[in-house]
Length: 404
Ligand code: NDP
Ligand code: MG
Image (cartoon, rainbow, N blue to C red):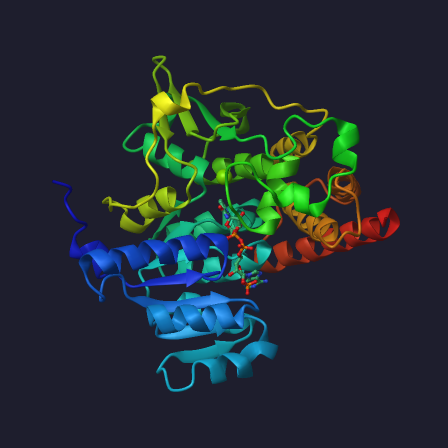
């Protein structure tokens, strides 16, 4: 008999930042499943947020009955108000309203906004001591030190949702970090794993977002195709687990069955395996420190027959090394890397630049920045946001010059 989660999980109110995205919807799927199993009152929702997807947000609000629904783009306020008129769901709009949503007293918050835009709401939830299920890796790449400091001050917790980090979080449970030899993240290799450089030079946005194993938002799908995703994840791992870069590694594993591995000083290796379905790591964070059943697919190892591993190719996928280098240079460099990458990926999705321009533009921003400052002391949030803006400007100028 599988034991159901306790009331500490089922009655714990949650807020979902980025509810209309891939991770937000997977979280809501799990909540729908919990309500079908344990009653309509299970996992009450304080707030749901989106940027512009008003129709989707209104439909989710009608189905899941949060107290508050927020669109960050204020020009959609009227549309959301009229879609939710008479439902009793409170409506708000604008970036400050997303931060206020994160401040409302839900003890568990899913941070699933894409990009550095998720940083301030995540900090707001951390400040009041919430348990934060963190999918928004860019917040950790551009200001992980601020996020972890705020979580420590607030007395809450960071629960990794990124599948690799969730795997490592599970494998590290009750283990001493000073007995860990190496932490390894797996990478699927993305849709271009076997492509030549000449083929990659002509890659279209449609090809780049067609991930072989995972169904995800457009930005992270492009990051998976360049392998920048794995670079961002190494930085994310350093921030979440507090280990130095020499103990962090990445290996390509095209089947996406083993998500992360921890090697200990006695030669033991603990790994977490599971289907490539985000509901599995999200469920582990949602029920933390307990577990909850899911309908996610189960592994059939005999049907899979083989699991393979190979080193990443630094020539075709330079983003991984750029990220590693930035990680070794410090917080300023990782903030610049993240901002330049966000701009370059957006320009590629807009068909303004070619696929291979992405690493070139990120490298240009890092080089320009290295010429200006080498200090790792970059102060607080205001300084970080200034740096983010400056790096975006360098990247946008480079996009202009590279325009196809
Ligand atoms: P999506 O693009 O699918 O969704 C992003 C969500 O954030 C949407 O709700 C979107 O609203 C909202 N949003 C976008 N921009 C802003 C903004 N400027 N201000 C406020 N809200 C905004 O992304 P994913 O769900 O794929 O990814 C979310 C995060 O999780 C990313 O950091 C990603 O790297 C990480 N992640 C994702 C995984 C996945 O499987 N998808 C796996 C591991 C990590 P709207 O719909 O209105 O645009
Ligand atoms: Mg991942």
